[in-house]
Structure formats: structure tokens, C-alpha cells
Image (tube, rainbow, N blue to C red; front, side, top):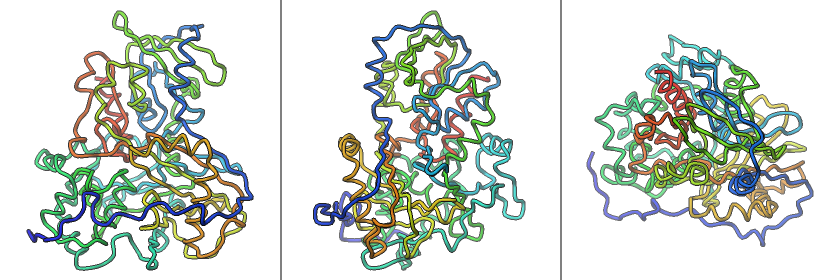
Length: 502
């Protein structure tokens, strides 16, 4: 195929989604409590900690900074049991975090994964097998999930709302969709995870945008590109004009989604916090410290002196270590260890807001697990319905994605979260074509200013460990040249640990 079209699409990737709704004209009374949380106060906490003297020194071989999936998997993979893991938030999880609502966990971040083909990285598969999370199904030639009660059956998986009605998917069935899938199909089986295993012959696709790749081979229509853009924003934080072709192709070809060996969809009520709990349960509790923010690192005589503030007690202590695995957000390095911040200056992050709407009564309407909302608002992704997840509570979790330039809105949302909750209610009202507010018991807002690294062209295959491992300083996390996916985070932690183990 090399069929060129004549009308060029915009740099935004075809027809832009509509802007924000006029909230002022859609206001309804919010007669329920609103709770908001964010980890965006990191800089303020660091500035406060600098003036507090250290009261104690701890010794360990390896200090792990960050208690998300990358940091926890690194801890699990270390040969030596002499380590400490520090997490700045009160709870572990990072972008796979969860909120306790009514005594039950509910996802506020990454909320699903899919069964794994047998060509995925053996290190990650082995760790998940050891934790009894997955087992190999020889008939399907896939590693499938042991907790089958959290599988979402195919008929309940997805619906897509647009202003012209409901559809099965953001990409409607059409001749153009068939051509698009034909273009992608040769890459199925080649787009491995972790992405570091992808064959060199495909790496040139990292240097062009997904839009340019599609533009070269396909005649597009606005609906096709709008659907692709929605899916790219949902998983990667940016549309196809911004992400690399390799990232876009990987989304559609890393599993046999459209063939005869479709993956299982795994989504517990707590989302990917499920994996966080499994990883944590393998460790000794005394080696994991939450509410502990590392704010200064200094290297002396081949040892690292890392100061941390316990945000619950306001006590500062110092950890002396031979190694550091930095699994936290890399933008914070400008405060903590500035000499390595420059390695990540080109990384852009999308900001996310999650709103858990706890329901008093179920809202009648077309509910699936994933309820996409396309063309309603440029930030809105839709919402997940806990009713499909074997949850004890009725919760609708809405997700909104913001581009890096819109991060300045995050403090405003934290200062007055009722406005974004109001907007979220207006979206639910449109989806269900009814007034939903009388069914809502409470709303819980989570603001994530650096939620997802955007895999722009040139982003992948840039492991900074190649530059820092000589100094016993190692990086893990998906913002170290990885796709923002659970298996990538898992592998990045194992990979960093193995550099120490070797």
C-alpha cells in the first residue's frame, strides 16, 4: 500500500476534539463530599526539609528511591537482601495507586493489564510466575492470570460514546479500518515487551511520528484518526502526531488483538495496585518506608549520602549506601541530584486527573467496564465501571488527560476540586442522559502532575544506565526510555537490579 491522500490532516492529527464544556451553563448542586489529593507538593516539602538537621544515619548496600512497580520489582530482583526502599507518598503505588473507599480499594491510576505472549521478557514473566500471578497456558501459548475472577469478559469490555450515539470501539468498522489493520498486521509478534528486546531492524520507527507513518501508507478519514488519537492519548498521553511510529505500532501489535489468539483483559477493582500489593508482600516490611521523601543526595568516597524527610514526623535522617536505584519521577532530580537531571530534560509528561464517583444507587444506562467518551471534551477519556470488576462498591472512575502545557492547571484543580467534579458530573449526565448527581455519594479526586512520560519520536531505547552505572547509580521506571506500561515498569526494575547483581 502506498496510497497518498490529497487533503492533509492538521498537525493535531485530523479534526480536533471539542473544547471544554461551558460549566457555568451546566451547573447542578453538588450535595456530596469531595476529597482531593496530589503529590505535587514535592518541591515545597523538599524546601522545608533542607533546613531540618539530620538526627540519625542508616547503612544499607542499596537505596531504592520510589515505591511504584519499578522500585518494588527492583527490590524483589536484588540478590542481596541489604536494601531500603523509600517512597515519598503515604501509600505505595505511584501511577498505579489506589484509594480506599468504604474500606475497599479502588484504582486511581493504571487500571488493567492483559495476558502475555510467550515472546515477552523472561525476567518479568518469571517474577510474575514466582508471585503466582500468572501461569503458562500451552493451548493459548500465553501466560494467563491465576485470579480469573478479575477477568473482564469480552461482551462487557468496552463501549464508546460519541455525540452521534454508541459504538463498539473508538475506531469504527470501515474500509479504512480494515486497511489500517492490514498495515499493522505484519508487526504482530515483533513488538515485544519490554521494548528493549525489539529487533534493531524496527528501531528506525522510533525516529518518525505515528502520524507520518500512517500518512505515508493510508488514505485517512477524520473518524479513523480521531479514534487512533483517542487510543494514543489514553495509553501514551499524546496523539499520533506526537508519539513515535514505533510506540503507535506497538500499541496495536504487541499482542494478537485482532487475530485468533486474543489476550485476556485483567482488571481488579484496585487496578494495577494489585501488582503493587503482590510485589510488596514478597518483601520485609521494615525494608520499605513510605512517607519518606529523599530530598538531597551527595556522593563522597564512593558512597552516597541521601537525606530523607519523614513527612509524618518531620524528622530528617541520612541513608549511606553503595548503590542507588532511582525509580522515582525523574523531574524531581533537579532538587535531589541535579547533575543527573539534565539526562531527562527532554522527557515530557502528561498530567492526569482521576475522579472516583462513589455511587449511592446504580445509574441505569449502557454500562461496560471501559466507557470511552470521544468528542465530548479534549481532556476526557471516559470512565471505568467497578460493577464489572467483582467490586463490593459501586464506583465510576473517570480519567482526564492533560498535555504538558496544561500542567499549570493542576494547582488550580487542587485549590478548587469542586469545579472539575462539576465538569465530571456534567459528562456523566450527558453519557446517561439523566441527572446523575442524586446517585453520587462522594467524589475522590487524584491529581497527577507527571503521570505519564510521552513516547515521542526518539524517546525509546535511551537507557541512562549506560551513562551512570559506572558510578553505581541506576535508573528504573518507564520514564527511562520505556513505554508507560506495567510490564515495562516491572522489567525496568528487574533490569536495574540485575546491573547491580552482575
